[in-house]
Length: 366
Image 1 (cartoon, helix red, strand yellow):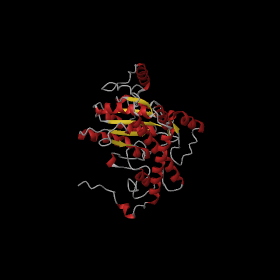
Image 2 (tube, helix red, strand yellow; image 1 turned 90 degrees about the vertical axis):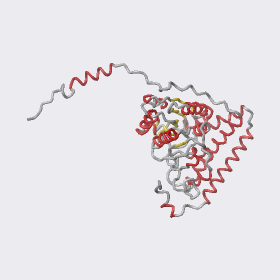
Image 3 (cartoon, helix red, strand yellow; image 1 turned 45 degrees about the horizontal axis):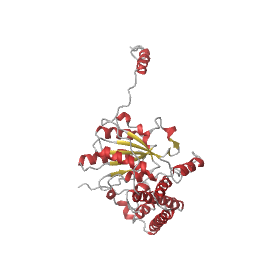
Image 4 (cartoon, rainbow, N blue to C red; image 1 turned 90 degrees about the horizontal axis):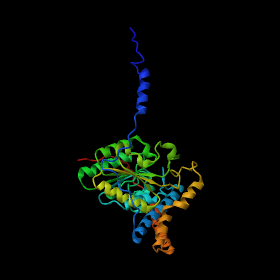
């Protein structure tokens, strides 16, 4: 005999009444971190020599990426190639605040600049881009999958957002070993919308892991503006529901980044769990070398270059403390020579032997 299900038993009008009651319930404000809120970061007060160091690093990344773009156009770099031009202040300021001897770094596929900021030889990075045996990953990683445990750099990852759980795992390892280290986990505004990112946030805060989550918000996830792709486009707030505090930072000013990084390092090393930094930055080139970037105007890009370029910004700070135009030009010539030497090395060094196809496949745990 067929059963008759009433509207009341099946939800019916009761469901709408419950919905009305839920809608009328006031929504509580976002819960703060269990440790309160971090202090407002201050712009870093750097001396002349320190600023010159930042200038060299940013200029090295800029010139290196320009050369990588040229080599890609010549067919010497295969696969995908994502350039970091415009975002140099982010990694330069963050890396300056951490301990390269004990901390861990992981990022996505726009990773060339991160490796250079970690102190890896430009020759080894360029050789990896061109698939040579002298590359940092023996020519088998290429642009998106570079790796160097010796430098505390755990990739270069090609899957959007996949590095965030890995970075959380690195934070767990530091806490488990009680070695005082922390994990800096870089990802972009597009990756911020991935489900695994939220899962990683939950675990990091639940276990109070020493992780600095760094969102490099360059305004476009591939070809989609962050405002069109994210219901909450103030990305520093993404951890609030999980009680992870967040701070928004001008990612085009290396001294602002350095100050925020210092605050974040003190927060995490103090045992207060993870923190989220949203670095508002901008990429000048397309998403990758194959992207014509028709989703934005040339005027928009030019306006950012003229008003907010991170290298020009620091150049003005250096001039204010007495560094001459001639000194800055000399640094540029020096950096160009380093990059040219790296490119020549990458073109001349041999490709991996075919036998390398069968190495580094499995890890012998015993």
